[in-house]
Length: 348
Ligand code: MRU
Image (tube, rainbow, N blue to C red):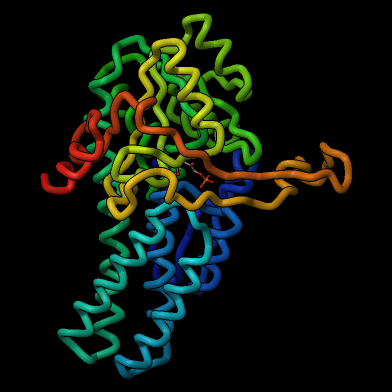
């Protein structure tokens, strides 16, 4: 089992995803600030993994706080929440996890003024978020696995696997693992996912480790392989799903969805309900992160583009709901109209 992020007595331990697949190195993060930095710099990435890491970072920061009164502890906690919320803007799991931790703090502070008890409760909450993420992905893997036929080839974009979650199964790769665990033979085509290469560095690495057959292609080959009839379904993860089903995911996902529509291939989104943002009506309201131009102009130290060239580096795009055949959640499979069906998932 791939351990993406873990709570330990020493601090928050995580695999440094920037170094994969050539180096398997684990980081031991010893402060809330270090965890925030690891999210910002993408040592850990993927919506659910960001949420779990943020929760652990907050618990770690509180554990180390010297404050002994509830107001002082609250002051430190507010600072940490603010720091965490400024790491990455698109994945709603980050804000969901911060809000869960805030709620846990409110509950604990209403019951006790003992700072050590409050700190203990916050560690328990972070651990619960971790455990729930693993269980959610197992559940959505079972639901989604049923949608794939034995012998199917699935195209995926970015990395929505164990590395993008608390560990173990993942979301889009959870659906593939769910189908495999149900005895189906599934092959995967992985888009390399420029510019950060989550597909080639992470998805190919994970699936290879699990002995799930995987073929790597560059992003601009997706249309060609679909046209050749090599793709039976597309399954991707999500960073934020609006209440109408519009889905933000890694840049290039929208392009894949349009191609899938053109070739009559079902396009599925797999995500736990912690990725669904019922507070926004449509994808128009999803903030799209723009990252450093260097990710586009360079490969490690090697320059790929002329010096001083104008660059845009959007990290995500939004796929309109009409391109999505189903949204596979931990509570079941939602079909259009998503405004109704997603809301119902929260009630079940
Ligand atoms: O920039 P990243 O690597 O954090 O983007 C990750 C994605 O877009 C994933 O597809 C998404 O978070 C789903 S992860 C289960």
